[in-house]
Length: 422
Image 1 (cartoon, rainbow, N blue to C red):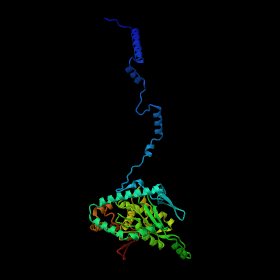
Image 2: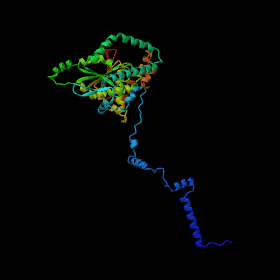
Image 3: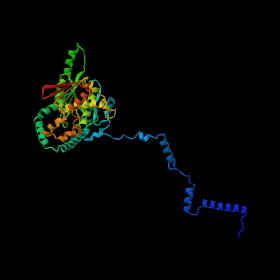
Image 4: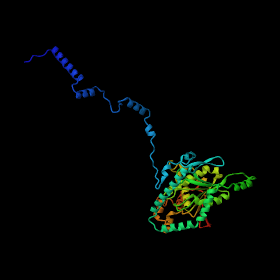
């Protein structure tokens, strides 16, 4: 039998083993042991704990501003422009208030136009020869692009080709008169051209002011009565089948009415395929807001405004007024804010000349004349009934929503067929 160790011997043996283990840990005999020792001696660090001074500083900055990244992130782009060209350059949430008009100064190739009362408006005008080249190149590319888009949209119908040839022949026959009109339009100092009223590419308008000779005569007649310098205002939306509408088509009307003491504004608006009818209505609404805020600088009375539209322009004018009613009760948002700025009672009269007010019935007539049904549906954003003013007027009248709707004078074929709706 082996002898049993005493308590003192057991303590001495345990002390010797502990010393040996300590020496083995402190003096590793291999690289592998050295690595293990390093890992054992290194303090345990959690995933969120910084390991360097740089990380500590970064964590401290993050703790001071935990939401800074979220606050500075750009909002998602939710705009949907079906046929936008380079409108994306100016694509923002458009709130046409006085402040937003002052922010238009960052639009390229524009300058400030100083008026007679020392106020300023923004005018689309190249500032140097380089910008002239840019404008020519940009407009050439835009016209080419839109022409191909339009040809592709109209490919389903062949009758429109014949109608296009007829229109081209008509333009050639009237070309001498057009050239004379263009010359007078360019040289006339009473026409303020290409004034910016919004951030879209075609958000431009012309203002036909009353000639000074007419103003002086009227002032002399009014000296004995109540003196005033403000003139009635007409906003004219030109026609063009929602495709070839242009503010220049109202040049004759603007010049004639201005000689009778009326300030005329001819806004441009996006046409198909550059925009759909909702875009055209937005442009018309923005133009009305600009007129209400700025027309007094041109001698116009913002409390005496008549909205006039011809053909497609008459349809757009009516849709713009009806959209005002539609959006009145909508929740306030980026899309509806602009519709809440001007009100229906601020428009004194509406005159529609040869306008299609029931698209549901007119679309078949258009189709027979080569204006394909599918194209009209696309222009109306596939909402034929909604963009039929005659149908919506009946609906709103039954709901008693037309209390503030201005008087409407509808002209068809001749001056003797004037109809008034109240």
